[in-house]
Image (cartoon, rainbow, N blue to C red):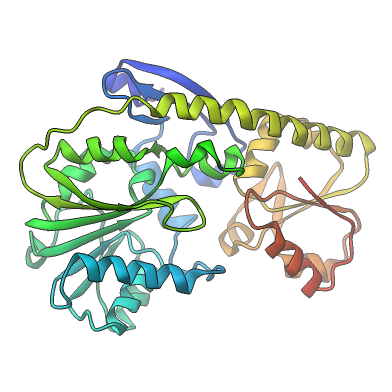
Length: 380
């Protein structure tokens, strides 16, 4: 049996236990404790997964190379460009580690940054970027850089990466293999300080992908131990409550206080949102007891959590629907093969559509209307 991550380090305090019903194709544990380190206050998922499990998941199940554009994405790109222009010169070597869909690098190229490089674990994403004239490599922050990239980056971008890493300390230490001394590390992470005011549910922030949880001060302390000094932070960078922080690599440890606020922030959030979950549980119970046919639309983190915590699986489920092509192509949940919205429209399946979506149900409602699906709809 694999050991929990905390068994390597010890000294943790449990904050919350998360249960999910994950498709077996994910190769990831379906439950774990969210804990706080007693020594430094850092909050993380005490998972039994290994690095290779997450590598498999991102390479085969949920790679980010073909994400659809969302409302406001153009503004987000422009805000990113403003930060990079504030941080460095157009002639600088800029490396995007874990570039996902590559749109940031492409936007920087259009703005005249021509010394740009992308590194990502997915060969498909790398090929897409190379085909658009951007230098890109298959790899990860855990790997040794190519010889020509060793300590060559003036700016290293890690947007939406640190919250996904099983070994964030190792990853941060490895950044110096790519980044020049005096270079800038630019990172985007979810800001747990925003949990005090958010109305988004537990499943939006806490699931099988997000396994490290930062406040501004805990991020500052995390960076300081490897010689990174905070230059500036952009809080509330986007509509999702993320922050962007820019750090200069000094090469020597920076004196920054530990941050123990995260555990209390998380506890208050979980206590508040469990009351919201209780309302969802009651609605699901009513739907199950009615025995009406149910079409579960959205097979992401909210459904995975509700499936594990309620009697949903005992309902009269007739179909599972998701627009993520990887889920439609390769997997099922609870014995149901996941179908696409287009397939749902073609099959004319009778039943109440139950939307499971932590954020963005308006987009699903629009898709249902556009496809001419006229079933009764309930938003969970």
